[in-house]
Structure formats: structure tokens, C-alpha cells
Image 1: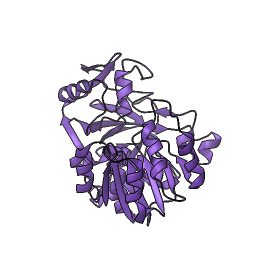
Image 2 (image 1 turned 90 degrees about the vertical axis):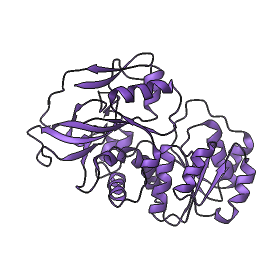
Image 3 (image 1 turned 135 degrees about the vertical axis):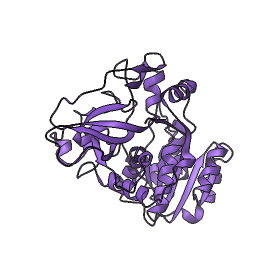
Length: 347
């Protein structure tokens, strides 16, 4: 089978690999149709960040069931499925409280084991959700990134009737922004430094947008005066300066959900730190995208919103191609962030 294989030091290759076979009673073999590149994959490709090499990445994928182990009775050949990449132990104190994202004994498809950037992949039954018949198979590959923002909303007690501010208008931010609108947010504001992303955010329904390279925190804060209460701020960019910005522009008693992963140390000035206290902010750390019962309401909500056609996905796609085309697009990043979703299309 064709597989997109990552070797150390950013070497992206299309190789012939043996088809994986069922090993456990609860294994499911999936014929992959669509698989997305995640921002978290970039350091695995270009910064020696993978657990092992060579590795086949891919944890945002959808496809069709090809075969099932004897313990799997609720899936059948031909069923459409999407990947739920985390495999928690289900037995530790965190898992027993349904804090699955916090499990310390977890496995992860496409990171700690080979993933969906291949024609076939074998995963455990717990790593799959079945797709409704009226959902397109490619949409299924977007469920996992959609649930990232939905998990932050879950931890914050929802976004209905709140003034939601999204800092970082990348794929995760734009998906979260659309979810907030669909789930009854009072207003949705998008902040980024890329004018093209802000233009797209406006087209996708942002109430207002701000370019934080051109407008400082005080200017943005003043512009948010009429929506300063009942605020939920999502930081999705994962940069020290945007975390500081989130604190500076937050309104009184706002919720601040930190979603983006930092790759550089964060230093807050004394005045900015003081704003956390003086505004009585609630800071929520959001890690991955799971709750109970497994895999959580986030996955049900994402599936529903996609089925109801409430989310626009096509404007978020920068590249869609076969293994060779996909490999070239990934290689061309050379470690830089994606400017839109890169999708591998198989079959």
C-alpha cells in the first residue's frame, strides 16, 4: 500500500508498505479516504519531534471499515468512520473521572503508532466514531480539529449568549469561530495578524475583526467596550505575545481559554499579570478534546454541526491531493505554519 512516511530531518516520502493486519479482537482495519495535516505534525516532521522514525503520521482522517476483529459488533464492512486518535487507558483515576485528555498511560494514533496517512490503517474500536449516512466522507476528517475548540467551550460551560473572542484565525480558530456562531454566541470577534485570514473570518461570519499587528491592545480593548461582559476569549495561536494580548483585551470577569501550544517561554510583565487579578479573570487550560461518556459531547456536537451543514470547510482547505502531491505540499512548508488545511486524498 502507499504510505506517506516521515524520516528524520524533514524527509517526506511516499513509500510502498505492507498492509497492516488485525492484531487484537477489538481492532478495525480502515481504508483511508481523507487525512488532514495538523499543526502539531509540523514539529514531528521538521524538528525531530516524533516518538520514532520512520513514521506514518495522520490523526485527522476518515474512511471506510475494511475488516473488524471478533469483539467488534457495532461496525461493519463499508461503514464510514472518522478517527478518534487518543486511546486512554480507561482505568486510571483520571480516566475514571472521564478526564481522558489527562490520562498518563495513553496511546495516540499517528504519533505513538502509525496513523492514517496511508491507504490502510488498523486502530482499536475506541479510536473510531461512525459517521452518519448523510455526511460526506471528507467532512469526517475535520471532526477531530473541530472538537479542539468545542472542548474549550465544554470546559468553559458553553458559549451560548457569550461574547466570544478568538485570537488566532488559523484552521482551529476559524472552526471554533463558526462553532460559536452555530451554538448561540452573542457575538464572535476574530483577531490575527494576517489580513487574508481576517477577511476570511469576516466572510465566515465574524461580528468584527482586528489586526493585532496594526492595532494595539488598548485600541482593541476600547473597540470591545460594548461586548466586554460575558466574554469568553480563546487563545488558539500559541504564541507568548498572543497570550499576553488575550489578558490585556479581556473584559471584567472574562473566561480565558488557553488552547494554543507554546513553543517559547512565556514572560508576563507585572502590569499584565496584575490584570488577571484586577479583572478577576478565569483562566482555563484546554488540552486535546475528550470528555465522558467516551469520546465526549464534543464529538457528538461536531458531527451534528457538520451534518446540519452549519460549518464551511472548503474555504479552509489550502491543498488537496494524492500521496505524491500531498508529500510535496508538506515538504514545501519547510517547518513553517500552514496557511490552510493540507489534505491527503486517497481512493
